[in-house]
Image 1: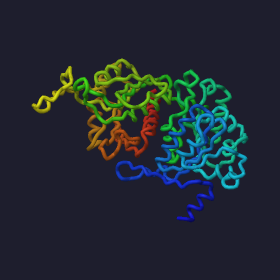
Image 2: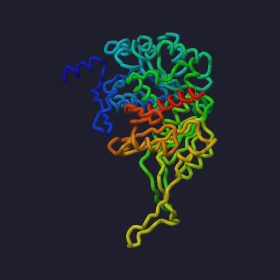
Image 3: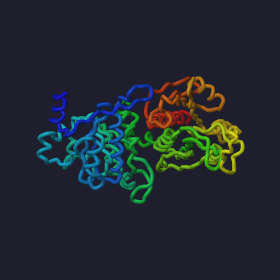
Image 4: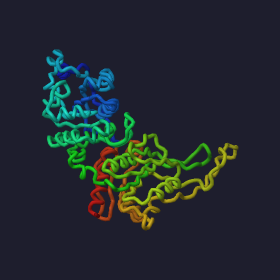
Length: 446
């Protein structure tokens, strides 16, 4: 043990980090990122604050994180913040003799399993494409023999500039992986592509890389037709729970967090679809660049869905309450000493089946979810026929799985050709995989 500690100190560590093991509800640790070494390069952009959340998420999953902070990056986040969250020192000076003696830039760049640049500014990407090495970050990137993943972040005009597009293409041709950018409002007041991917999206891309699914990471700028295969298409996604009022202060609900539905909406938008997200009450932020309609009840959700038609694809990921009060109480129900009141319930409208029976307005591809606690696939097959859906994505939401409210999911895709079992993966990765399948399906139909 002492020898291992001494070795870590000689390698440049100033503290000992202990990987945190996250369990998936079956008693099995999520070991995908356990002991993986990430070198995170933080450049100068307002999105640099997101790297703090990324570090936290990586550490939760057992990865070790070292940070290189550029001079520009230090204008947005402090070395102390990065060091506190990563549990390691922060590197920022190429010419520090102490650094070079203990952890030279060559060793620093090659000691990692993956280099992640977030945010990857237009300036830094230009330097990477040109092979420049004028500070620690660019020197490490030029000296590394390890894979590199970039998360671009910049003004929309900068992202669309021919020079930037050429640089992105050059980096892609050299095997540099990319996640994002997304579209939405920017700090400069403009709207469009250029927002850095959210921490959960970057984490999903990192997980995809270590799983060997490099294709899940965004392709090059020169493959925009392939990168945005849903451009010109319209998509509808429902997400979250519904709240069915009992009286003015109480309601019937379920444990859905909306994480899966929101991730699907982001993934479809990322492939170019004009996306409408109809969301029940959640604690999640609205995905940027997506039209979001907030609703409370199942009836409100149905009305919003019908108003959004026609669409090319609809994904009903919301956990809609099956029942509501037959008559909502106008005032708060009070204790009267005679025992609890009888709650007369009535069935809510079936949103998935209603969309399946919409005639000429029926979505070209109708996808539903089946949240089950037993006989998951069996119930999903029956639901697909009963609802008239093209696909059903079945998942086990038993408490032990941690699916409701958690960050991971296990999906069984049921269609007319059978059942496809997906491995356990993050909800972000489930969303990307589903979006890609949707794009492929629509392409075949064309």
